[in-house]
Length: 225
Ligand code: SAM
Image 1 (cartoon, protein in one colour):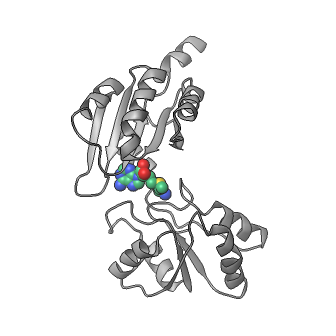
Image 2 (cartoon, protein in one colour):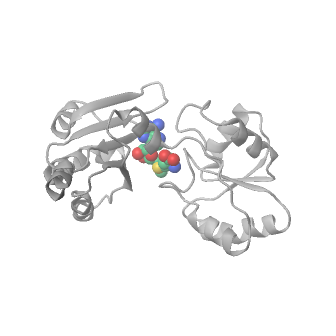
């Protein structure tokens, strides 16, 4: 399980590069994107596509190749495989067949954002993507409203405002951080209350990739002590 960059192509470990170069096959979510990364490091390993829609079909093929002696690397579109990305079923199938699964650690947008946010992230809860459906999203946010831990979400640019509206309604005006386009040319960290962050996007169209961190419910902890 090879972690790759979340933007900047230099954000990859020596070990990840060597693993990709030495593998017999690299299974990648998007082979065009993977090819860009592999070319950057002059790696010529055979690529096969393995994404949400063909994962089940690919499992039999990839595990067969491994059982026949091949070394396979799984590479996500961005960051760490399986974290809000496909790969879980492949790992489970590999483990069931006695295949050794090893992480090659590296970037993950949630952890990168937590490291620079300036929020008390010794306790955090990774919530990933909320549902695009408002009812489900609100229900999910209500489930998380009492947690005294920084909440970390992924969100697409065109749902950012809807997410911020619901978060403000359900959590109240908590401190939050929006990490946009980390490691890329337009990287930006916006810090403030949910209301201020929503206002910041009132006059600009959200573009790029967003990770959102929201402070936990401290009052809950204070009253339960
Ligand atoms: N596996 C990845 C990881 O380890 O972080 C996450 C994959 S998930 C499909 C993609 C989401 O992660 C994006 O929609 C965005 O919310 C977040 N993300 C990825 N790259 C980012 C970046 N450079 N800056 C901010 N958020 C990012």
